[in-house]
Length: 329
Image (cartoon, rainbow, N blue to C red; front, side, top):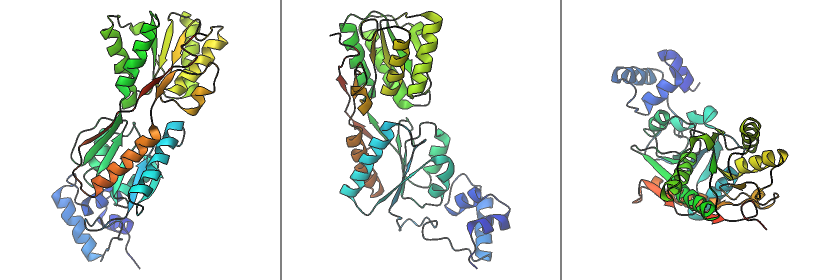
């Protein structure tokens, strides 16, 4: 009977994670513990599988893409771009889409050659821990470290330009609806808003900055509904961290009897399909998320092949799209 890593862990009286880390040479495991586990592996004639062995000379030709969930239009578009990119640049690679909570063991046992992390909530210390086993490309998070690479789009500049458009339209009190605190996209977009205000000599007012702590339509609706119920309309424009928040906000504004854009102008970010079909159609910032996914796929293959790659991939793609929600007829 073949001895599994679970058998080895039980024999050593350690967790499977500790045994896996020790077998893969993680520096987090004390040397004495590692020697004990290796000795036990020899005693039990434990032979790891080709995937779990982590031998540097072998490849699984699997790339793990870890997302927080399967909701949201941006995830789907980026994943489509990634799949297209892997097919175009090296069709040998399989793309495995997973949720980290249940599948981090696939990384630790080296069943993938590289991990692409799209989950902003994943702890930085865990990311650095995984990077000891294999290279990681992080999206929507700012992390520096050995074996860690980052990819980003021009979020800040896009939101800066959108804010300047509203100021040029004569808006005096521009409110902002924040997305999730853990999201790097959320923080960089907010930085663009604040930078535009400072550039124009407009005072930053915390009283009209609202925190949905989410990128969903429902949270945008709930947050703005509550704000209007409590304070009424104290702003003439509302910038939202993404399109889904903006769509929810427009619904809440209309239910409260306010006209968009006559009473208040509303903007989003991402240019999802729904943005052009709602009424009024949503002014937003267009990002080529499909093309971004393809660029990240090429970047991933270069990292695996140890090509001469930079620590960060920066995609300059964020263009203001003006529609009915800011332009009165």
